[in-house]
Image 1 (cartoon, one colour):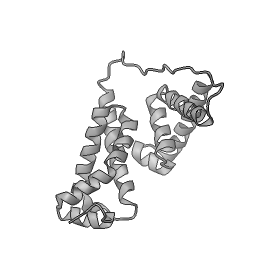
Image 2 (spheres, one colour):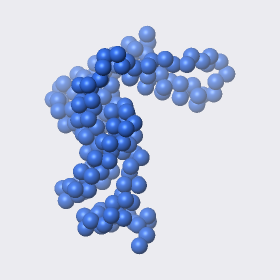
Image 3 (cartoon, helix red, strand yellow):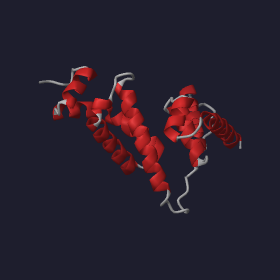
Length: 182
């Protein structure tokens, strides 16, 4: 039975029954996106891959709790983000102080550059600026701007109050502005 053309709801029903081919198809559809989500949080290839795979295992074992109020992708992404944050916090306890972020950027003359190249350079500058921020600031900006979470979702993920979330996002934005203007 070809599962590649099945819609996700059909695949999820098969996954609940323990169909490994259906699980593999769901994994193939979502693994790259979920890896990217995890990598943006943990910043380590191997750890991101581990988080992503553990998240899939957790999702498949908890499919009965998936209510369908959100898309499966959004539900899975929430699992990946939460799992990645837990792993990130654990890994930060053991990171030597000498490991610092490489802030080297190639400086290029903007004369004669295509508009698209200039926009890519600006995006890279913003991402490099985010990497130079305090880890909480970087995480909250990544969740808000890159992942697209709203304040309530960030509050749940980071386990902070709504007021603290707004303050944290505001301070992170201001810190990023200062880094970019420096």
